[in-house]
Image: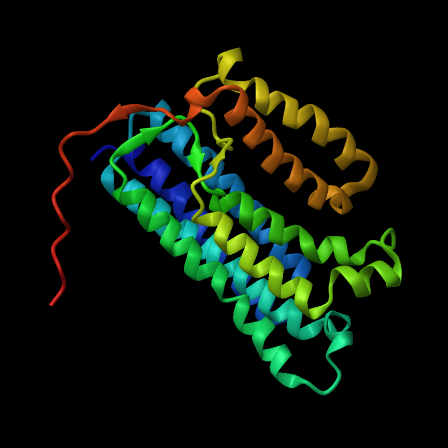
Length: 263
């Protein structure tokens, strides 16, 4: 195997390494650093596939390694970030009083993110159809949204009244459950890594960028919830206006042989 064949896998391993670093920072309650690691992991996830195609170095090993890295960087790391963030941020539980079971309920619900991310990626790996768009919320998009939460909490734009409303026990619980269900939903979503740069295939990506960049410039990370909702809405608008995005472009009639079982 030539050296260039290893380049995409090295990039994928960098994705995994920063996902692991995020876990460590979350454990030390360094939430900003944990979020930065998820951002950097998403950068490596963004470029490894494109470089693999450019170098013609795509491989079954690379695909499996990519999924395993994504489970850590965009499943376990964001889930643990939510876990420690919920545990550390007392204002999330102002409405709880002495009902400690609510605390454990919210903390336990943060573990849904890694579980449903793993389910999503496993389903993606065994789906022999190649779709134009993602079905369900892409795990990197979910991970990036969660990674912005520590920065959103630092903004004074919301005020204490808004914080107590938005970040109370039941809102956090609802957020965890909603994101988990979106991961495995059948809803069509814009691919964050379009393989075809023709205008017809990227026009809604351009629309998302045009709407999101001004919000990000003016409000910074505080705009991330709005940008996330825009992403969901634009994905569904495209599906309604152009239902052909639901059609797969290739069907692999022969399934790959099952992997040997251990033991």
